[in-house]
Amino acid sequence: MDTIVVTFARLVARGILPLHALSTILRLIVGFLLGATLGVALGLVMGRFRWAEDLLVPMVSVGNPIPGLAYAPLFVIWFGLGNLPAVLLVGFAAAFPVAVNTWTGVKAVKEIWIRAAQSMGARERQLFRMVVLPGALPWVLTGLRLGLARAWRVLVAVEMLTSVSVGLGWLIFGAREFLATDVMLAGIAVIGLVGLALEKLVFEPLERFTVVRWGMLTG
Amino acid sequence: MHHIELRHIGFEYAGAERAVVALRDISFGVGESEFVCVVGRSGCGKTTLLNIVAGFLQPTKGEVLIGGKAVTGKGLDRGIVFQDFAQLFPWRTAQRNVEFGLEMKGVTRQERAEVARRFLRLVDLEPFAGAYPHELSGGMQQRVAIARALAYNPSVLLMDEPFAALDALTRDEMQRLLVDVWGETRKTVIYVTHNVAEAVYLADRIVILTPHPGTVRAEIRIPLARPRDVLSVEFLEYQRQLVGHLR
Image 1 (cartoon, rainbow over the protein chains, first blue to last red):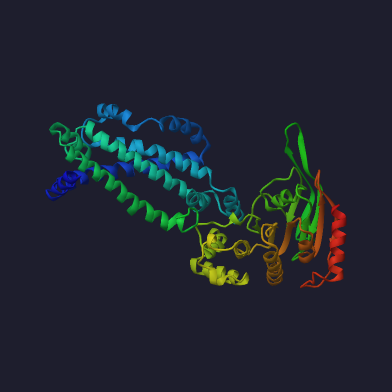
Image 2 (image 1 turned 180 degrees about the vertical axis):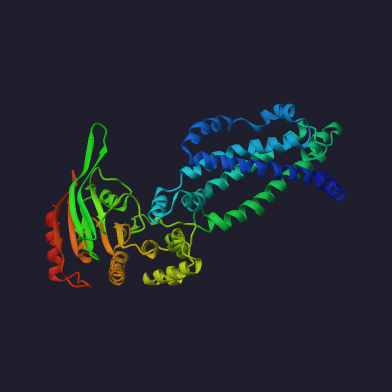
């Protein structure tokens, strides 16, 4: 335990951990934003249009339980090595839970809100923007949270596979060569800390400001 | 000429084996600024009837006229209050809920706020303009719903057992408030309920529906002056009469 703390401090002081962590976080953010955008868009389209639901829901349902990592070799063949396949795979893997939950959220919007809005003259577009979107938000947030967790998992593993030159996954994998378990554990600790920080600094405030304040979720 | 005319309304829906007749040949009119209660047991089709007037359902026979024009769908000439407290949008404050219909009409922000405030004052909720629905009690939420249904100035107010889920004391209070609000706004009201005392307290006229299929059994006019004394002999006599028709 002491060794890990010391190694952790040493790696931080030398700027090694921050460097690796930063590049991993950048990949995570870009990949996740990509996946979140794609997932929310897909989910909304599936929830709104019957044809999209018939066409896409079976595909997404089959794709959702497949671990994102299973696609890693394919992405390497398609997009080569380095950042591009890593980021794309992260986005791809994150999109599934986001899409499924967004779709469910749109479907779960209460009929009585729709009726009330229609009786007050809301047209299709207004209904979607002012009732369906906020009504589905608790589900969308759940989807984003699941998507982020999945993105995280895929990213660390994929960094070990796609030969990026810097990143937490690479750091841990590289430390194996030297049997440097303290470095591995320090890297793992950073992964945990970043996950926690995202939860506390991004998702909790976002929820507090929206669904908790609206009483749609107890905080 | 009545403000609302129901002409030979019939409604059928597809049952397991054959079509079920929910409503048969329902005709009555509601005068300008008249308060009509539709009373019947559960399952007599009174909510279906209200949904037809609201434009959510198309009658299979007959037609509804409002101001001489046939109803073809939903419209801003009708405001609707449902029984379910969940009808308010939880992501909007009381005031923003009341503003919704005005927003749909394209009214400016400032004017919306003014009108919403005025209607919240009408239902005694102005201090709660900034509260979210989940912070309000059931009775307060229903008052917001009434303000919301009135704010865009429909000529007709349709109410589907709006106080049925409230406790008895709150319900009495809400009925008094509704009579005041109606006295001030002079809307034409169709109010659906199964509560006999409530109907006699509120209505100018009561239309009694009997089930299987829903048909008009009788109409009672209540000429008592408002506010009505619920313990007076006349009040109780009307209740007795109404209960007799429902048996």
